[in-house]
Length: 74
Image: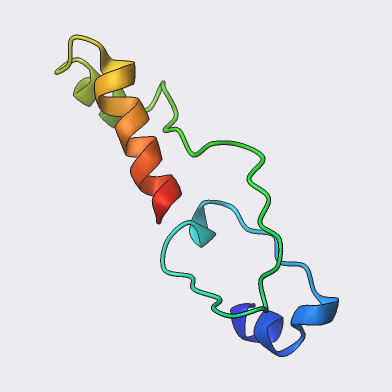
């Protein structure tokens, strides 16, 4: 999909989910607009997320928010 987008960037739109948050780089003018409709927070009912959240006094600002920012920067 990425290669097709790069070859046809002027007439293509690329829609991605969690799989496009990491490891995709489209340098130059091929990518003109990036729309993020939802910030990449973890699912709050995920058992791993729940277990790790219990390690913090304020799990949102100390765990969830920093993890989302790291993912967003990628």
